[in-house]
Image (cartoon, rainbow, N blue to C red; front, side, top):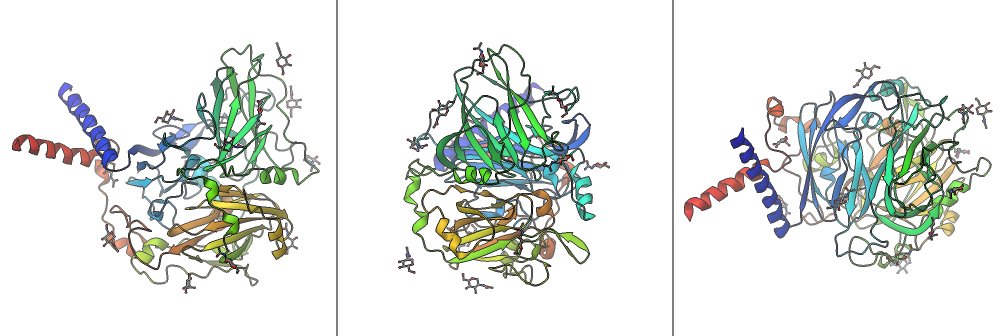
Length: 594
Ligand SMILES: *[C@@H]1O[C@H](CO)[C@@H](O)[C@H](O)[C@H]1NC(C)=O
Ligand SMILES: *[C@@H]1O[C@H](CO)[C@@H](O)[C@H](O)[C@H]1NC(C)=O
Ligand SMILES: *[C@@H]1O[C@H](CO)[C@@H](O)[C@H](O)[C@H]1NC(C)=O
Ligand SMILES: *[C@@H]1O[C@H](CO)[C@@H](O)[C@H](O)[C@H]1NC(C)=O
Ligand SMILES: *[C@@H]1O[C@H](CO)[C@@H](O)[C@H](O)[C@H]1NC(C)=O
Ligand SMILES: *[C@@H]1O[C@H](CO)[C@@H](O)[C@H](O)[C@H]1NC(C)=O
Ligand SMILES: *[C@@H]1O[C@H](CO)[C@@H](O)[C@H](O)[C@H]1NC(C)=O
Ligand SMILES: *[C@@H]1O[C@H](CO)[C@@H](O)[C@H](O)[C@H]1NC(C)=O
Ligand SMILES: *[C@@H]1O[C@H](CO)[C@@H](O)[C@H](O)[C@H]1NC(C)=O
Ligand SMILES: *[C@@H]1O[C@H](CO)[C@@H](O)[C@H](O)[C@H]1NC(C)=O
Ligand SMILES: *[C@@H]1O[C@H](CO)[C@@H](O)[C@H](O)[C@H]1NC(C)=O
Ligand SMILES: *[C@@H]1O[C@H](CO)[C@@H](O)[C@H](O)[C@H]1NC(C)=O
């Protein structure tokens, strides 16, 4: 036993020194080992199967610093395929690591696969989640932080603490049951609640909240200021986030520093992330409620779709009690929320991930090279199946991922014909992809023709959110665009019966998913990809295919099987085992030589 633990310690040492030597030669590495499995949990008081990582729900936070290499060894102990996507992380030159079916073959059950990517030129708050089979509705998500390097200034003082708050609507039915409902052409209906960091509501009302539900508590010191990073990881419900008696000073969203402004509450739509600086300036006569409540719904019927946590000062004199703080009273004013969204602006003088000021990128003076008006509609029936569409096309995932099909010149895997304006004929099901021009500047207008809120997300990019308005977008709408300090982010809301316009600088080569973050519509096909190819083939604008790439579809014969019998007897941790072995051998060799 003793010998074996000494052996392990020396391995650990070797591991660390290998990483240090990488750090000297290259950028430092942070590694994680994620084991995905089902556990039983009762976040709303009813036992159900949730997806855990290393036995925990939600999963661990990935805490990285810009330029780090992030290595995540994912072992799939679920009974279905798995892919992890890193929402908002831009994966520079590297759609190979993006974890969606258009770029990667899935990780089969019992297999593991190592993601390896560099977080570059971004600083801020993100999250990761499983992208297949509706799995996010059962968990498998966690926070993802990218910190600045010490040489890069931050436009606020160092906070006393950095706290992740994952909010999201939640069903007691698991993801396989929810999938069956959608496959049968039915809507999911009202969620059963809202979770905060995987926990149900504090019992603020004995009739509404059953006994014995575990709630989230955030412990703080009076007088201090904390950074709270809030992401909506839910299925499809927009949430209003607020903390009783406390101002939310908005500081960052999805990698951009905002003009700092106080809000009493902020609408956070599915897939969005924000950082607030919150000063503990109250008298602690009691604890305070943290609330995430369903937005744009009938509040009397949706009352149970409310997440409630507790903000606890170390000098608190008692429990929180009484009614929750009010949501915005805007039932008769549909412009309130949109005006709030428009008020979120970029701090153009704050520095970004690179030492040059962000404002040096004047997006408003760049000529647009291609325009896509992308419109959804309420769900349609195609070939007897309920489907969701973008511009009249319901996306069908390719059997051979688009990126791999390009690499190996597989013919007919997809069509590069996504239309610039919505199709007028009957809706169809196709693997139809946007032909993006490398170094082009694309304007995308999302037109939401549904009666519910959507948020649209681009992988691989942060886009500038330049305009929003009710009704149909027209050329004249461009006159209302913010050409100066529109926020750069990866996920924007599009209000029902309204449009949102974004500008995208197509400088990141790869195949990038463009989708609704609303899981139900995404599952039913409301997505496409943007394909950006550098006509000059080199290894500078896109990284080569990784050695461990998985093969499937037309290329499945190239895949060597993985020996899953070793799965439980692995000694080494992280992705450093073989490196450690090689380095040990080199050390022994050196000892023999000298
Ligand atoms: C989901 O729930 C159903 C029961 O409603 C159960 O039969 C099934 O095993 C569960 N699936 C998973 C993956 O947890
Ligand atoms: C699977 O994980 C083990 C360690 O957990 C590692 O040694 C092995 O290289 C991994 N295999 C793959 C294909 O990533
Ligand atoms: C913008 O960033 C600058 C530079 O860090 C900072 O001094 C300033 O206070 C910020 N402005 C606002 C309005 O947040
Ligand atoms: C992330 O790691 C840094 C040290 O590298 C630490 O200072 C910081 O507190 C960590 N943040 C979180 C949220 O764990
Ligand atoms: C608890 O909720 C019920 C149902 O909405 C409501 O009738 C009751 O007034 C609430 N109780 C308190 C103490 O707020
Ligand atoms: C935000 O509110 C706090 C009080 O909670 C106040 O001290 C601060 O000056 C406000 N900041 C801005 C930018 O309005
Ligand atoms: C503490 O603050 C609350 C709300 O601002 C106020 O109603 C209460 O009177 C204060 N209590 C004390 C002891 O100052
Ligand atoms: C909300 O739902 C309740 C109960 O179904 C109904 O009586 C009420 O009219 C609804 N309110 C609105 C504004 O639709
Ligand atoms: C944009 O287009 C206009 C006219 O179409 C042209 O005069 C201008 O030079 C272009 N600007 C840039 C930055 O290319
Ligand atoms: C895609 O766009 C490029 C220009 O960026 C063009 O040369 C090519 O013909 C287009 N391909 C298709 C299939 O339309
Ligand atoms: C949907 O589009 C039709 C046709 O353009 C329009 O008449 C209708 O008002 C739109 N509905 C919404 C909710 O945007
Ligand atoms: C790119 O890198 C790969 C593997 O590192 C190498 O095989 C290939 O020749 C390189 N291609 C170019 C154009 O440099």
